[in-house]
Every structure is written in structure tokens, then in C-alpha cells.
Amino acid sequence: MNSVDQLKQWVKESDNIVFFGGAGVSTESGIPDFRSVDGLYNQKYDYPPETILSHTFYMERTDEFFRFYRDKMLELDAKPNAAHLKLAELEQAGKLKAVITQNIDGLHQAAGSKTVLELHGSVHRNYCLKCGKEYSARQIKESVGVPRCSCGGQIKPDVVLYEEGLDSQTIQDSIYYINQADVLIIGGTSLAVYPAAGLIDYYRGKKLVLINKSATPMDRRANLLIQDSIGKVFSQLEVS
Ligand code: CNA
Image (tube, rainbow, N blue to C red; front, side):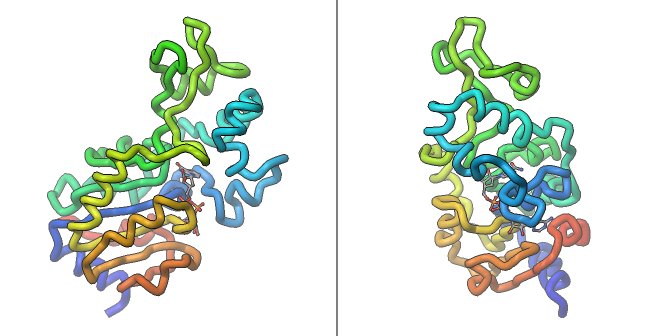
């Protein structure tokens, strides 16, 4: 049996699938990841993305942070691709329990997924550091310089920057779903960013599927390794 057929069979047999993904899930929607050849690491900036997207940089060079953020992280016209849509269908059919994502683009929700655990927050939530008033991603995209609230406070995206901690409830929920999953599908992530990558240690089953275009440090742990495009693989899955 080839590996996609094996995946199809596991998906068919299970009603307790959990998906854990990263930026590679959205590249087929036109959003660049960090580590692919055309990812943000390989585009020329004065600083690497992890430096610009850090808490220190946000505090000290806020103007430059927002220039990069608006230009590279706010791809507001992107649409869900075959992987997002199939995951939503699997949830709707009662087969998939949760999507756990490192992405901040909101495309799983746009595809119709309901239980989405956003480990690194979302560009769609922004709030004033002074009064807490909320702002949309579109308002941030259309702002100039450092976006300011009507009260004069500075607005911060609800995105977990490097050096910042992850939300503990989101971590706990992710651990719960991974721990009790029958099939864990990991896709489109280099598994290089911690603590998110460490979550897979909580999986206890024997159906760990890893779908990624390039090699990852966790390849050896996969029961099924598929080195291919995630949209292509997911479009072959049947929901029944
Ligand atoms: P990463 O480190 O950039 O790794 C992405 C991985 O996906 C790479 O190993 C690629 O080979 C692989 N890949 C790319 N396209 C595909 C595809 N179509 N099919 C299969 N595999 C593919 O990204 P991670 O998510 O692992 O890194 C974590 C960071 C990146 C998180 O904190 C994210 O918030 C951050 N990020 C998010 C977005 C987004 O929200 N869409 C975009 C860019 C970066």
C-alpha cells in the first residue's frame, strides 16, 4: 500500500483525528512560510524575521516592526486551500477533534473549522495596550506608522512574539487533544519552533503521520512519512 493509501485508510477508520500544523499549510494559499526557499528567511531584510517579530523589537523599533508586519504578515486576501477545507470537512463529519496551529492567519476558521487552537495567536485580533479596545486586521493594514487607538494608546496584535509566552489554556487544550488522539497528523511545519514542536511528545498512539515537503528533526518518529505538498495530499482524502 502506498503512503497516501495508508493515510486514507487510517482517516477512514478513525473518529479521533487531531491535526497539528504550521506555516506550510498556508503556502498554497499564497502566504510565505519562514523556512522554505521562497520563505521569509530567504528574502532579504535588514534583520531575520525572528528578530523583527520579537518582543524587544516591537518595543524598541515599533515603527519598523509594523512596516514588516503590515507588509509580510497581513495577507488579508488569502483564501483557504484544499488542506484547510478538507480539515473543516473532517471535523464536520465528526472525524477530526481539533486543529492545533502555529499559524496566525485565520484560514482554518475561514474554511469552517470550529475547534482551532491558535498557539501563536491571530492577526485578526488586535487590541489597545492602554484601554483594551479591539481593532480588526484590516484597520491595522490600513493604518500608517504605529497604529494608535482613539484613546491614544498603542495597538498590539494578539500574536505571540518571540520572547513572549504562549497562552497556558491553549497549551493545556492542545496537550489534551494530542494526548487522547488516535491519529495525529502533523503537516507543513519545520518542527523547529519550541515550545510548540514539543507538543508532539504527548502523543501516545501509533498513527503519527508527518506530511512535509522537506525533512524535519522528527521524521524518525513518524509512523507514516509523506514528503509532499499538503494540499495535494489532503485533496485525495475521502470524508465518509
Ligand atoms: P516554517 O519553519 O517556515 O516551516 C514550514 C515547513 O513547511 C517547512 O519545513 C516547509 O518545507 C514546509 N512546507 C511549506 N509549504 C508546504 C506545503 N505546501 N506542503 C507541505 N509542506 C510545506 O514554519 P513553522 O510553522 O514550522 O514555524 C513556526 C512559525 C512560523 C510559527 O510561529 C508561525 O506563526 C510562523 N508563520 C506563520 C505564518 C502563517 O500564519 N501563515 C506564515 C509565516 C510564518
